[in-house]
Length: 151
Image: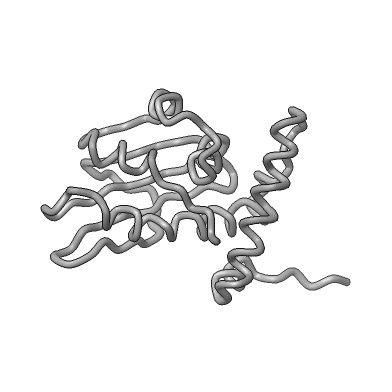
């Protein structure tokens, strides 16, 4: 009997993160291009990819002109999705996973759109049109511009 590796194990090793996200996203691109039903949205595969990609947000938001205390909730809908809170303190942005939250600033996207945002695989205007945005539009637009490919 094969033992299942816990999803969180992948976050312990940066090299595994890079390898995993690269392989996941290339496989997903192929499946998407041939319009194949994408089993990679299964939480066992998608959740580690998504968690790793979300970790690009604090660095990405450090280039944001936002300087007041801000909080934004990013929710990815789907079986492998989740919700994250990104918060600006006096010195830096921090990210943490959260259960569903009621936040003044929110971005809600589908799992089908999230990976395409992270890999620059969707036009930014199309992504904005397919996202549900509540609150600060500039804060939300900044999320849509993230690229989370690890080099």
